[in-house]
Length: 370
Ligand code: SF4
Image (cartoon, rainbow, N blue to C red; front, side, top):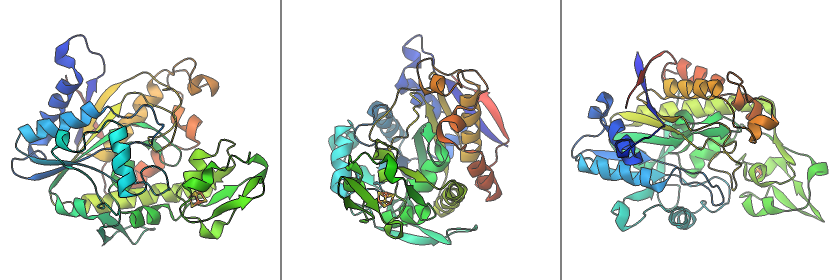
C-alpha cells in the first residue's frame, strides 16, 4: 500500500520555512530512488497563465532544483505550452511568460528550465496507450530522455478534471501540442449566442479559426474546434460551455495519458501537491478569484491516484472561506463538496478510471510528516 505524507501548512519558526519543507519532502524514504546522484531528474511545474495571481511561488521551484542538485541529481525544470493561443502558446511566448511569472530561466536555474516538447512544443514521440479512448499519445521528447520525475502541482479546482493535481498534471503537462489536442479531442463546445457580449477576446485565443467575427458578436464553427478551452476560459459572458457528456471521456483520456507517461519513464516518479491558495480557476486561466478554502500544507506520495484522492477528501472536509465562491454556492460547511459545487464535476471518476488502468490506488496509508 502506498503512503501519502502530509506536511502541515502552519509555521512558527524558520525550521518550517518553505525551503525547509522542500527538504522534508526530499528526505522521504521514497525519494532515495528518485533523487539519485548523476541521474537525470525532471521537475514538472506549471508556468501559469499571465493574469492568474496565485501560482506556486518560484522560490519553491528553485528550491526543488537547487536541493536536488545539491543531492547530486542532474536536475532540470520542465512544463509544456498551452493548447490555446494565449501567452504560453509558442516557445517564445512560454519563455517570456515564465520570466514574467518570476521563474529563473537562465542563470538562476543554470539554463535548465525548458518545455517538455522543445521550443516548438512538437518535439516528441507517439507512444501507444491502453484503455478505451486515445490509442496512444505524443509525449514530449524530454520526458522520454530523463530518468526520474517529480511532478509538483499547485492544487486548484479544474473545470473538467474537477481537481488540478498530480493526475491531471502528469496526464496533460508533459505532452506535445499534438498530444494535448488528442486528449482534448473528445470535448464538445457549445456556443450560446444570447450570452455573447461581443467582447471578442476569444478570437485572439482560438488557434483553429473555429471562432470568427459576426457583426457585433462572434460565430462558432464546431467542426473546426479542437477543444482547447481558450474561449471557455476567457469569455466574460459565459457563452461557451462544454457538453457534460464529454467530460467523463476527457477524465478517462487524461488518466490514459498519465499511464503512458508513467510507463515510458525510465526510472521512478514522485508527486507533490501544494494545497495553498486553492482557487476556483486552475493556473491556465488568465484571472483568478480568491481562494475558497484555507491553506492546508503539502501532500506527497509516489502514487498519483492516492495523492489526488487524499487531496480531494481534504478539500471536502475543510471549511470554506467566507466571502469566497464557497459562500456564494452555500458550501462553506465541512463535508460539503466544494469541487463539485464549483466545477459541476469531481475527480472521483478520473481517479477510479486511473485505478482501473493501474495508475495507482486510492487505498493508502496516511502519515503526518514534519
Ligand atoms: S472554439 Fe474551440 S478551438 Fe477555438 S478557442 Fe474555443 S475551444 Fe479552442
